Image (tube, rainbow, N blue to C red):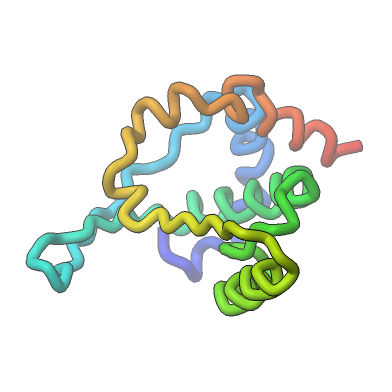
Length: 141
């Protein structure tokens, strides 16, 4: 499906897509793989979702973010709207000046290159407990 076709596709197909999401039977289309050379000589493989799957992912992200973001630590600075790595460093400096002796920083470099995706999916309680379906049901109320 082309991006320009996406505008007209969801409305006539929404009931089917919604039922597939609610029942857990939705199957994303195969991703396009793209190899990006790394400076060290290796390659990074990017998996590029179809336009429809990206639309669905974004909708689920926006909905789940509203539910789960309030439970995130206020001290988390990465991948948060309105926060930056620079703000995190400034906050760490502030804590040191207040007398805290330790600052912990975690860099998950290459995490998604190394993580066992099968195990991650299998152990993902978010999907095991049917929370996607529950979010969609709550959205209808």
